[in-house]
Length: 386
Image (cartoon, rainbow, N blue to C red; front, side, top):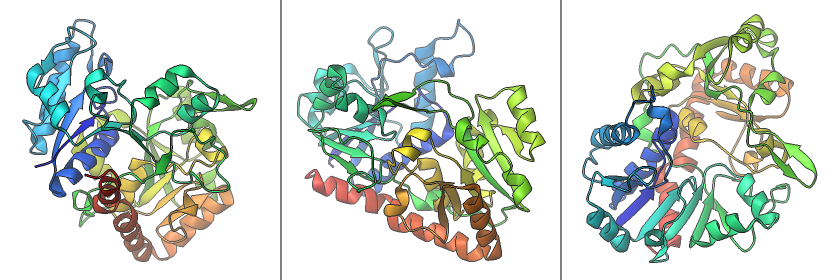
């Protein structure tokens, strides 16, 4: 069987939505008849797994990856290269990992989260899969040599910036690197809608405040933290007869009090995001997703579309999300809505509630048409000659 390696980052960001996002690619590759392997070689201490300074981060990471891969029937298909510590390889031997790199038809650098090693680039089969567009492209535009050297190690480039190459996209295209838009992949049957879901609240899961990763482009600052965008629709619960729940991380007591005073239901994301099944159940029990995007993607019209929203659609849950330009590629108006104003949110909620079964069915259809792993991975692998 043809071997394909995903260079991932589960222990860097050990939250359920991100883990599901990576497992969809691995499971999709397996279902397409390939032999996928998961490898972490990012040199980042997996500090998010630690609860005290005495914890052994490598042991925690090895246990964490091992349990996930065993769940998906890939117990012998992974490695953790402890570059942050003692350079030891876990999950398979160092010799086996080096041979895997030589044998693999492709190595996919998910999120671009791994700085390429010589063994990753030796066969010129390393593929860059960008999940967060904008900042890398701006760094290339500004001539940052470190970023140019990083990208130059790859042979092909894919991005979740679905609006790239469209006339209204303002993200500078990172010449000479040709980024091809590609939606996040989803394995639909892993998200079959539950039979007895309550479906009362529109929900989302994510971070409230992240005071970093601002970028400056052509003299203008573009923010990263989503709380800036949520604040623009703070009064939404008073505008429509509908419950909204934000399951949040990175927020404080004052943030929670403010949101609750405006009618939002606030829950702690940690309990949901720490467990794959709890996360999937939360999505499945939702009426749909209401969420915002990052300022960088909104004003620069990258077309970014998240794996989380794709998962809601796969579960047959309508999605109302902030417009980033994705509507130039994805069908909107039934099952999926892009908004730019609060009035557009209110209209979308009312339309969904007026005929919920139709919008739920259409959400699933959009997932099947645009995000199904066969539609995403099949063409990509054909283009790459695998």
